Every structure is written in C-alpha cells, then in structure tokens.
Amino acid sequence: MRPGEQGRRRTRRLSPTLRLGALAGSVAVAALVALACGDSRAAAPAAAGARTRADSTPPGPVDSALLAARAMTDRVEALCASDSVAARNRAAVVQDSIRADSAFRADSAAAADSAAADTSSRRKRRHKLPERPDPSEWYGVVARRAMHTPVRPGALLPGCRVVAYYGNPLSRRMGILGEIQPDSMMARLDRQAAAYARADTATPVIPALELIAIVAQGGAGRDGMYRLRMSDSLIEKVARWAERRNYLLILDIQTGHSSVEKEIVPLIPYLSRPNVHLALDPEFAMPKGRVPGTVIGTLDAREVNVAVDTLASLVDRLHLPPKMLIVHRFTRPMLTNHERIKLDPRVQVVIDMDGFGAPWLKRNSYRSYVQRFPVQFTGFKLFYKNDRPILTAEQVLKLQPIPLFIMYQ
Image 1 (cartoon, rainbow, N blue to C red):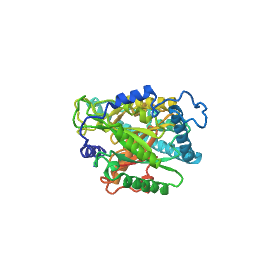
Image 2 (image 1 turned 30 degrees about the vertical axis):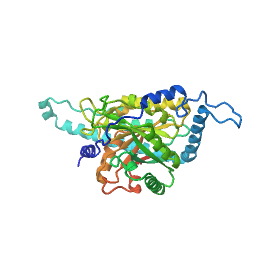
Image 3 (image 1 turned 180 degrees about the horizontal axis):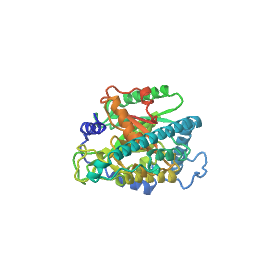
Image 4 (image 1 turned 60 degrees about the vertical axis):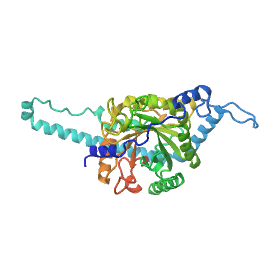
C-alpha cells in the first residue's frame, strides 16, 4: 500500500462521530469574558514578580497564575534540563538532517542525470530539464536551524520525551482516551510511558492527554462551520484528570470550515495554564464545498503561524514555560509551505506522523512526510487497533530521527 492510501483509509475509519448539539453557553464569549475580567485561569501577571503579601493573605488570581507557572517551570526543568540528554538528542536530529540532505541531493542528482541522458526525447516533447536543487532549499537546513533555536527555561524538548493518549470522552471510536474508564485508561498510559523510560533510560518521560476539544462534524451545524466546540465542563473534567496525575494536557483543534484563528479563542483560558499545550489536525481542515471525513484536509504554514503567535504571546504575557504545538501529518499535501513555519523559542513545534498501518508502511510514511520535510521536533503516532502488529517502544526509538513525542490512539 502506498503512503497516500494509508491516509485515505484513516479518513474513512475516523470520520467524526459526535453529533451537533446545543452548547452550554457560548464558549467563545466565556473565553473573552475571562480575559477581560481577570478569571484566574487567564489572568495575566502585571510583572514577572508578584507583589509581596502577608502570610495570612491568600494569593489572588495574578499570584496564583504566576505561582503555577513557576512551579511547572521548575518541575520540567528538574526533569528535562539535562545538558547531556538535550545535547545527545539535538546531535541525533542534526545528523539525521544531514543524512536527509544527502539522500535528497542524491535523488535530485539522479533525476537530473537521467533526464540529461534522455535529452533528445525530452526536446521532442518540449519539456524543460529539471534543475539541480539550490543548497539553500535542502530540507535538512530547516531542521538544523530548528535545532539551534535557543531553549528557554521550562522547555519540554529535547530534554524529555512526551507520551500521550488521544481521543474524546464522548466517543469510544475517536481514541483510547474515551474508549475505557478513566482510571484504567490512565493506568495503562502510565505503563506505556514506563515502557519508553525503560527503552531509553537517559530521557525522562512525561505522560499527556490529548483531548479533541474542537471536533470536526459531518453536518454543517447552525453556523455552517462543520465543527463542534466541546463544553467547558468536558474540558475541565479532562484537565482534572491530567492535574491529578501530574500529566500534560494537549487540546486538539479540528477546524472543519472554520479557522485556527477563530477556534483558538475559546481555548485561551486553558492554554493560559502552564501544563496545557495545543495540537492542530490538518486532516479535518476542509476547503469550501468539502465535508470532514470525506477527503483529507490541509493546513498552510500561515494557519500554523497563527497558533505559534498566539502561544508565544501567552508565554510572554503570563510568564509561562514554552508551549508545545503538535501538527499531525500523514500525507504531503496536509501541510503546505512547512519551511515557512515560524521557529520561536517560546513555542516548540512537533510534526507528528499520524497514519496507521503495517510497520513497514508507518516507517515509510515517517520517512516521507516527517524526516523528509522537517520543521523542528518529530512525533510518531500509534493505533492500538489498526496497527498490526503495533510497534514496541524499542522499535519506535529506532526510527530516524528518534521521535520525542509519541501518541497512542
């Protein structure tokens, strides 16, 4: 099966299953009110240091937000700030980029030589010979530039590895997060994360829950956007699961006919928390006239950069540790102009290989759509039901480059 077929199979299997329904209030309005009125989830500290208070005075919203951010930064730094681990992981990515460069140049040179050997037939067809690529356009250059982006305090990558469970509690079909009871699900996640810690004892592992917070729909809905925003109560429930276990929380956006700019607004109160990160799913970003689940969607770097700018602004304004931004990909057209995605030390961009299939197919897809078109850090997704057989932690860590973000659906 070709890599493209993998994507088509996944679209048919994972077409949205949640029905459109009435929301408990306007989430977007709630988010804006929270920002305007100083909700403790979104309040911005006036300065890096909170004002001194008497011991008997409880901390206010500004102090609480700052203290939570500092505690999270300290925790992540204690886990992920090993210079030796970060240097090893960075060196591995750079070496993989050099290998990708060499392969790209060899392929291009072979294509040019083959075309030159067939000049007579090409002249008859009036086809222009392909040119050898400009070195500035080699994809490995992007990855090497990314690896030299400064690492800020509290950054998760490259000093740690994140292992996440994906889905939505309202659907058993959308992933492991909603397939089994929460306690059983999180116990299983702990065991899965421990497998990676054993396979690579030098790199600490942090578990995470990735909740699909904006769910693409097969119906247009009242506003014609083909997406459903999850209620505050649902997001808060999953956030409590994560906080109870000291996990990260990742909020996933499937835009439908909407945009990243519009759909990130209701999530700002949650993204203002130091342990909450963001994911984008281009598969369900639809062009006009297309219905989610019937074709594979696409996002351009412009949309990704909206998320980068929003997260970077939150990091600065609320003095947060750097945010992760996960972008799922399993075909080339799903992410256009990848080389134009902004690299910012406040935001760590992960391109996650998101297709299912046999091990050889997943490895080929990873090489074709992630290694060949690097942005910054790499991720790899596995499917408990659809990967047959499913790769072990040891096998996943033999991929080149070694992924620092692992997800299970």
